[in-house]
Amino acid sequence: MGKNIYITWHLATHGVGYTKNIAAAFFRGSCSVGKDIDIKVNQLEMEAVFETDSDGFLFDKIYYLHTEQHILDKVSTFRLQGRKEALKRDDLIKGAGTEKSWKDIFENGKENFADEITHLSQEFPKRQDEVINQYWRFINYYTIKDQLTWLTTYSNFSKYAENRFETINMTKKGVKDLRDYIQIANAVHEFVQELKKTHPDARFTFNISLGSYETQVVWFCLAEAGLLPLNTQFIASYDDKSNTLINKRFRDFYIKTRPTTIISTIRSKFSVYEKPKSNLRKLANLKIQNYIKAGFSILLIGERGTGKTRLVKENSGAIIIAANCASFDDDSKAEAELFGTVKSAYTNAIDKDGLFQKAHGDILFLDEIHHLSKDVQAKLMRALGTDKENNFTVRKMGDTKETKVKFTFIAATNKTIEELKTHLLPDFFDRIAQLVVELPSLRATPKDRIDDWRTVWEELNFESSPPLPVELELIEWLKDLKLYGNFRDLQKIAIYYNRFLTFSKDLKKLLAQTTPVAYAKAEFKKYHQTNNSIVYQFSRSQKPREAIAEFHAQFAEWAISEFGSMDKAEKHFEKIGDKVTKGTLSNWKNKKSHKK
Image 1 (cartoon, rainbow, N blue to C red):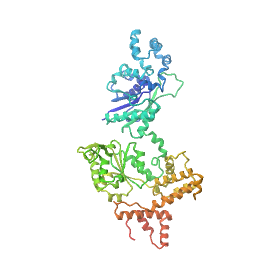
Image 2 (image 1 turned 45 degrees about the vertical axis):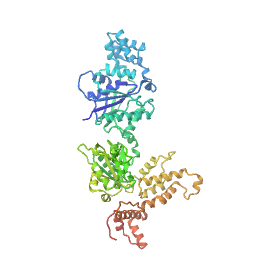
Image 3 (image 1 turned 135 degrees about the vertical axis):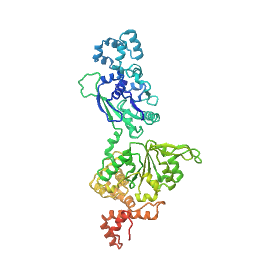
Image 4 (image 1 turned 180 degrees about the vertical axis):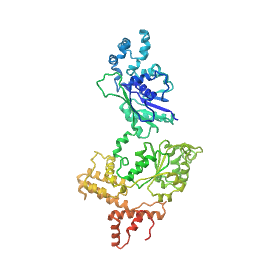
C-alpha cells in the first residue's frame, strides 16, 4: 500500500500548533484518511494526545509549506499583537504559578525562541521545564522559524517528527507575495510535480483551509485542472465560533472533508450533462460516471457537435490529453504523435514524449478514431494491451526499450457502430470498445433545448455580457430546429444574434431584417441550415455504398424536417411525380437496406 502524505500551509493565526492538533485527531482515530470527515474536536484534548506512547495512525510524511517571515508579515500583523492579552486570559498559567516567568519574557521584549530558552535557564531555572511545556499556548505568536524549532525539538510531537515532518520554503520557489495567485500557483504546481515523482503511489490529504485565501483558491484550481495527484483528499479545519460570548483561549475546531471539484459543482448549473432533463442524456452521463472509473477502454459514439469532449471533461476530474485522428497526415506522423520519438527515429527527429507518455495518470482522448489507418490501428492495438496492473506498454519510434504507462483510454467517433466496424480492424474495435457510451443528438433531447441555449450563450462570454435572449419567437424557432450541427449550430445562432446587437445604424439600414431574431434566423438558414442537412463531406476511406447510405440518411432527415413528417414528405414527392414512400424514408433514416 502507498504512503499517506499530509500537506498543509502555515496559517498566521494558528501556526504549527494547529497542524499538530490536526495530526493528533488522526493519531487518536477521530478521523481517517480516505473517508468522509465531519467532526468537532477539543484543542486541549488534542494537545495531550502525543503525551502518551500509544501507537496511533500517523501520516508517513507531513509537508509544511510556508514563506519567509517578511513575506507573511506583509499580509498579517497577528504575530506582533496579542501575546500580553493572551496571557491575561490564560487561567491555566495563573493557576500554575508561571505567570511571572511569562510576563518577564513578554515585557522584556524577548521574541526570539532561543534567547528566551537561555533567559529562562538563567532567570527561572526551577521553572524552565514547566514553562517550556506551556509554550504551545503562545507559540503561534512567534516567527515561523521559532515555531518550527519548537515543534520539532520541544513539543510533545517532536519524538514523531524526525524523518516525518518536512518544511518547504515556498519563497524559494517564487512566492514573494501571498496575494499573487500566479506566483502561488506556479510554486505549488512545481511542488506537486515533485510530490508525484517522490510518492507515485501515495494517498494525499491536503488541508486547503490554511495559508491565505489566495492559497485556498489555488488548491481548488489545481484540483479542477487535474494537476493534483489522482488519489487526493481535501480537508478543511476551522474554529467553532458559534458562541461569540465565550471568551476561551482555545476554541473547539472542526475538521471536514471538502470536494476537490468545488468549482465544477458551482459551475454545474452551466453543465450540459450534470442535470439534464432528457433521459437519453441522463443515461449517457451516468454511464460515463461509472465507466470512467472502471479502468477499461471507452468508446463514445455521437454526431458531430454533441459534446463528446464536454462529456469527458465534466465527469473526469483529470487532465485530458486529446488529439484528433483526422489531423494525422500520414502513418508516420500518427505513430510519432502517439508513441513519441528518439533522435535516431528519422532525419531531424528529436527526443520527445508521445501522447501515451503525456497521458500517464490522466486520460488519453482520441477523437475521430475512424480516421486511423489499418497499419496504425495494428500498432495502437498492441500498445493498448494491458498487464495485470492495467499498465499500457509503449515504445517510442526508433527506440528499443519499452515504457509502462497508465491512463484511461477514451476514443470517440461520429460514425455508427455498423459504419465503424467497416473502418476498423475487428481486434482493434474490440480493444477500444470495451465500454460504449452513445451521446444523443440535440434532436433527441428537446427537453434540454432551452437549457442548452442558455449554456451556449453564457459560455460564449460575449463582451458586455448581454442578457440571455428569450423572446417567444426565438424560443419557438429554437424548439423546432433540427440542429444537425447540434451545439455548434446553437453557437452560430447565438453569435449572429449577438452581432446584430452591436451593428451600427448604417449597417442595420442595409439589412432586410430589423430584429436580432430575424437576422439570426436568416443568416443561419442561408449559410448553415441547408448545408448541414443535405451536403455530406465524403472521405477517401469510405466505400461508395457507405457514402450513399449516409447521404440517404441525411436526405431523409432533411425531408422530415422540411415537410413536418414522413407522411407529408411522401405526399410532396408523389405530387412532383417521384414516389418515395415513408417506408423508404424510414429505411434511409435508419440506414437500413431497401428496395426501390
